[in-house]
Image (cartoon, rainbow, N blue to C red; front, top):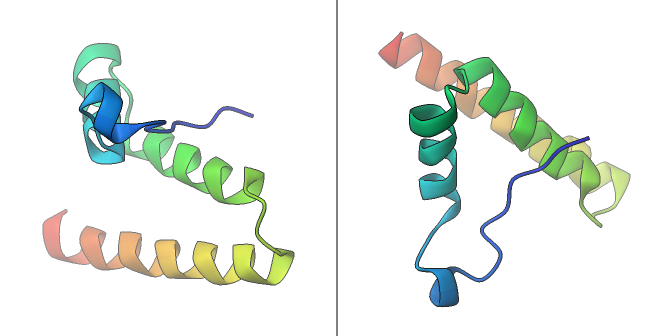
Length: 71
């Protein structure tokens, strides 16, 4: 399982959004691959299983909204 993180945004002058953008621009990651990385981050977290499922549902809802409005 692979995850993407921003580590220390202040020290490295980055954000998770900038990291995802770099993956698309520099390495050719697709939207589907980014979505999988986000899910991996949720599943690899230290949250409870209940919280993971709730967050995954929230992320899925937001992806669906974005797809409806921008694709």
